[in-house]
Length: 128
Ligand SMILES: [Zn+2]
Image 1 (cartoon, helix red, strand yellow):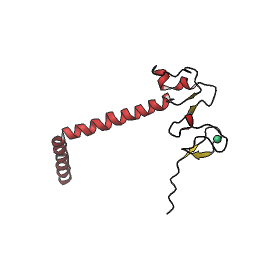
Image 2 (cartoon, helix red, strand yellow; image 1 turned 90 degrees about the vertical axis):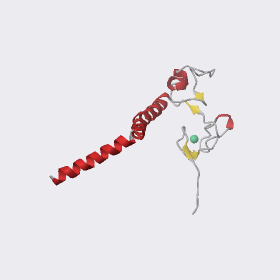
Image 3 (cartoon, helix red, strand yellow; image 1 turned 135 degrees about the horizontal axis):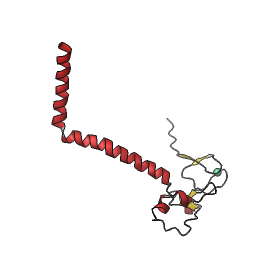
Image 4 (cartoon, protein in one colour; image 1 turned 45 degrees about the vertical axis):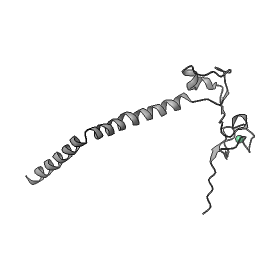
């Protein structure tokens, strides 16, 4: 079997598939990574809006980028909507799933008793 584990990304300018480790787009020469380093993704404003308008770090005032609030390129950009959704998902998963799981763990005996009780009830109901 030929294992071709090449991660592909899409160039934001020409929308051609490019290697996710590529520093520049081989199709249009668009700069994809900052400082020529494949580990640093470079975020770039696509329209007329500045990145800062939708960036988490601008919103919570932790950004110290000199081009703020008019940055059109940034390596630390974090989309506020995306991080909100992530946070929401985490919170949902945490709150509901974790609550149920920890409650079950704490009340294992009670859960077992309840299950047994319901099984007995079903048997009693089905026989009468
Ligand atoms: Zn391109």
